[in-house]
Image (cartoon, rainbow, N blue to C red; front, side, top):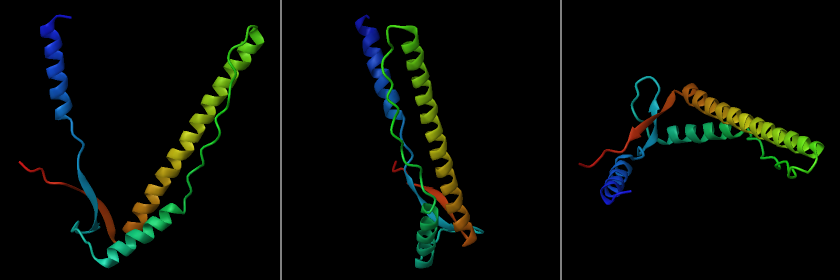
Length: 130
């Protein structure tokens, strides 16, 4: 690769990496009807109680991974190894699906609990200093 192309590649990589930033901010409690941010003791107590309710839904525990031996010399060993790998993938996917469902259920319980108490969470971005 010529020197000019390499230099251009390095400069473009540095510029593109510098342009991508993570959004910064916090979730704040707000009145569900007006959207006005509230930060009183009652609101924080409601948030704490809703977190307790949310955490009553347990996350599935990670299961031990199936250990599959390497492919053997004969066809039967190769078939058994392939079946084992397939079963291991199915078990991992089932665990991930259960985990995703539990997390979704937790998020729903939390937001419903807040709404029941007249609150909602809103994202408040940190102002960018220019």
